[in-house]
Image: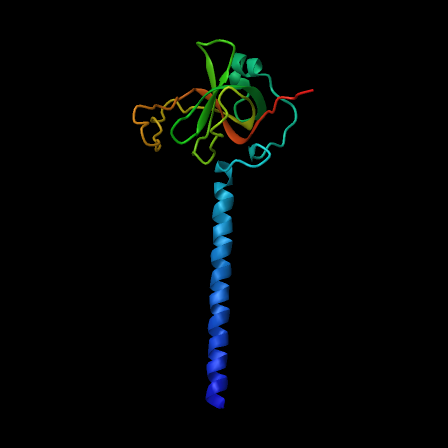
Amino acid sequence: MKSLKLIFALFLALGMIACSSNQQEAEMTAENSHKEAMTVEAADGVVGKITMAEVTPLNNLLNRPQDFVGKTILLEGKVTGRCMGSGCWVSLDTGNPEEKFYAKSVDESFVFPTDCIDKTIRIEGEVMVKNAGAAQEEHEHGEGDAGHECPQPVYFVNPSGAQIVMAHTS
């Protein structure tokens, strides 16, 4: 009878250890999925977080980008292009086909929605200036994108949130 109680206690202890291990694994999985949340499109069309309400006119940024470096802003514009590799950047319509403005994820932790081209998008993020001495950044491209090059703009927005603006119908 004592050995039966001992075996039962041993199985109970092993079960508790296994449950604890599964809980830690679940917590680690939840933490990793939080880190990857920027790459998943939410049902409301928001990727990441948008906390600002006031939109900075793109022309203001284009005319005096140095005034915005280090500041978090909210931009709104039509997407004219997207990284076809990792989805790490989008270009916005500036009204001049020769001039482009980019929102570009510095560490590729942010992925723009695949269906954003030709749509109006709101992007919140920090205005950054490329380090003049920095080497060309490398990242993985999708299959068949061997000839694809990502832009290296001098000024860009490092996104923390983006949302495709839905057209209102009356």
